[in-house]
Image (tube, rainbow, N blue to C red; front, side, top):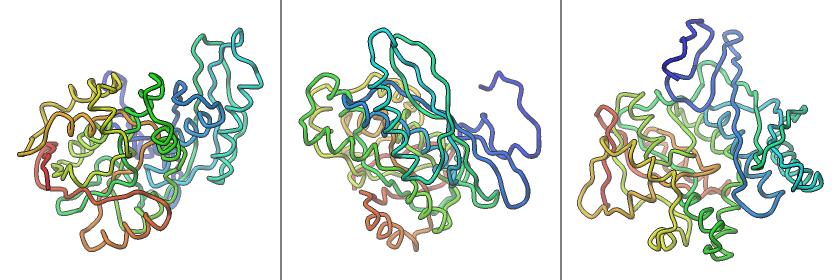
Length: 319
């Protein structure tokens, strides 16, 4: 993206160069539009569940910017020779479920013929220009909040290999289909300014990019990070997605490992997520109330420690 010509319009509040989750374009002093697009290959066997996961994953980028989704277009790649239109209808119904839940409209879309099915959305939302959540908004002294447990990439890999127990797979699907709408509202109300959603680059990749753009370091207590039950055992048995290794390669130079932090800990923190939770910073005096609100709204949330002085490093420790 850095090879593209930068847009120097003063109304482009967030573009591609900072690695943020979506672009933001200012309309006036009180309104800005949030633009994003995302689509994925199937991660679960049930078509409607996949549609829900893909839609939740796509709209999450709007929530990660502190915004509210308004309108979406379906993005579909479909193998018309081998997959029925009835099955596609189930996928699209899953997307409609998320749109109904989130209060935004789906106004059409685009479909292409493709040997490998893919589904997602292009989404437009809105946000107040002074209340955006961005990669560059973390501040020294804040506490780090993570709103969903990790382990999604490991478990979906286990599903593909038929190695994930039913209860573990169901927990992962439940997490992936839960949107970040409430988490975004809570973060903004708590005065957060720096946030991201934890998706394909894992907690370490997305957290590392936030630390870099904010000019800070992250101090993470790995024992405080929530993990879906069953994910650790799968990872210990070698059930790890290929994207996790790429995430580790990108973040390796900025990692600082404390005593007791082992390879398994790092692997899980680098796990490539689909429709993961939000990661944001709040002042320490807001932590208890934020966690209480998140848990009341159904989130498995935790404070995973603090933001300290540094230049993009990630310090990992046990306790």
